[in-house]
Amino acid sequence: MTPRRWIVLGLVIAGLGFAVFMATIPRLEEAQTLGRQLAAALDQDAAKQVARLRQQYYASIAVMVAGLVAVFFGLASLASRGR
Image (tube, rainbow, N blue to C red; front, top):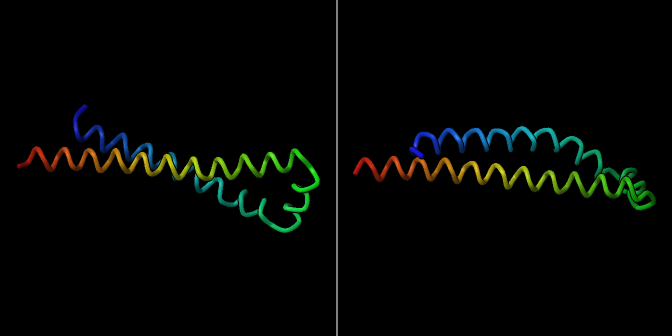
């Protein structure tokens, strides 16, 4: 795979991770309000939903980091070719 493809692939992956991250933040903030926390403590389904939102939040951050690693790998490959 060429370095430019690594960069493009990394940007696409990071962009998708960012989109999921931005979609998750409002729902996670809503789930962390006091009333929602009380509902989660009493209702198992609400507690599972909050747990899924947290997992989605952290997974989206991991996807963004993986995309950025691919971008930096591509840039490092381009830089080493130039020498």
